[in-house]
Length: 245
Image 1: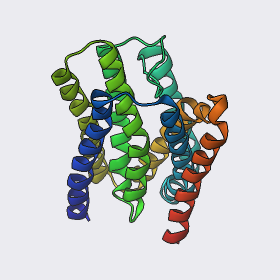
Image 2: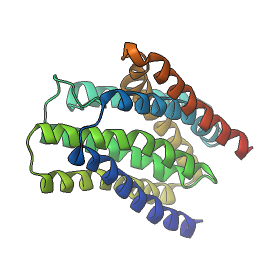
Image 3: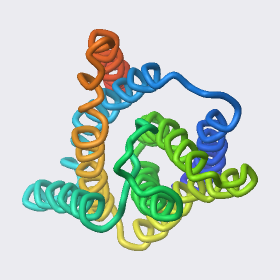
Image 4: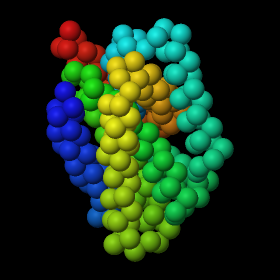
């Protein structure tokens, strides 16, 4: 089991860094129309919500004690809320926000955020067939996040070489979180995997409802396209759940 987890960790870790770099490279090459990003973020919201309810929740419920399940979801939801709203400054996925601090603060805030995504990925590797679903859900919102971070750093007039380095470090947070997660869970056991999945579920729910779901109706001109993107994300995760069964 642990050898399979290690192999998956290498594959997903390298893939996460590469995909994050691709998302961050786009603002360095050309200007991107914000309306298209809104639709992609709406799709990500659907992916995250469906992954939380259809994939993470059943696996967490099968492993964690019933009384711990709701408590862990609530704790992780509130922890990320406090972290994002009162501790770190998090640039939203629309790169033209004018109320977010640019530069290092944005980077460190998103790095912490991404580390917890990596933790969710590491926990999912201990459950058969759950790893690919969680990886897809993470990358569905990390690619636009790296796009946003890169755009913020471009607006802050950072040199391109420095932006590329920081986007690489941003992507590296995913495998770092996954390594920390797998190390802890391998030492503790299956009950801890259920708790870790419940904690991950809370973060998925927070990110989707607080950061991404508002994008579905933000742009009046593209509300229908955004709604289609949202339900497309749900449909894709629903199909994956159906095929698993």
